[in-house]
Length: 178
View (tube, helix red, strand yellow):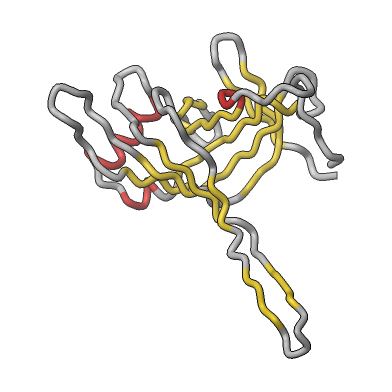
C-alpha cells in the first residue's frame, strides 16, 4: 500500500472528532459498528513501543522497539440506554461478569481525516480481540451513573476502509492482499 495523506486543509489542525472508535455490537459475520466515547471529553490511543536503549562495549548507543501495545481510556463514560456499545459492555461486565467476553471484542478505529483510496471511504483498522476493562460503576450523588473503561487493542489487525453514512451506519471493507 502506498503512503496515504490527510484529506484536511493544509495549515489547519485536524479536529479530534475525526478519529473514531467503534465496537461491534452485532456478530463477526454481520457487524454492527456502534460508536464508543459519547460524552468523553478527552481520550487518546496510547502506544507503548517497549523501547530499549543499550550502550555496547564500544560506546555505541543502539535502540530497539517492538510493535506497540495500544491502550485507550474513556472517562467519564456515562451510561445511556441509547448507547449500544455501553449497553453491550454493561451486560458483559455487570450482568454476566464475562471476563473472556470482555477480552474478545471486535473493534474498528476509523481515521476520518485520511481517505483510503476508495471513493468516499476512510482509512480504518479492525482488531479482532480487544480487551475492555470497566474500572468502576457509580458516581457522585446528584450526578450520573458512570462506567469508565480501559481498552487494550489486540488480536488480528486488519487494514481496510470504512464508509460512514449520513445516518452513522459504518461499513468496513478489508483491503485485499496483492
